[in-house]
Length: 132
Image 1 (cartoon, one colour):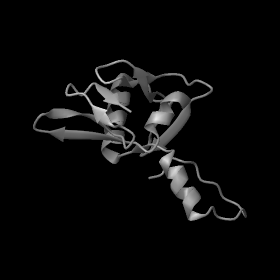
Image 2: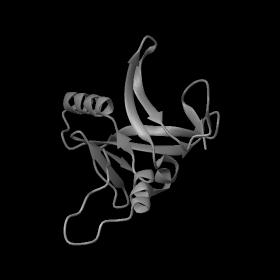
Image 3: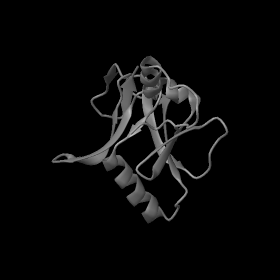
Image 4: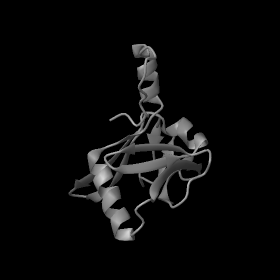
């Protein structure tokens, strides 16, 4: 599902290349990720809260992901929503996260959120840091 807002009206449709470009600038939230975010949000008791996703300098390979609750929004935040939940990203982090898919996986080794990020060039074995 594309997180970009759609518009209606008599304006001509965007060319396919522009749509592909918009998709590259969005962040996809899978149904599994949305279900887990909703579960945790409901347990937390903050129905309007969103998850803040971002990157910050540090970690073994140069950057680490930020994943925390956002009870309020900043004026520069970009919001992406799907399946009844929303995440927010600051403009500087969006440079590194555009085109990413946020998923939630369960497996024999445990469960957790997974950043399927086409911009990442590498990751640390600890799973806590990423290289761009």
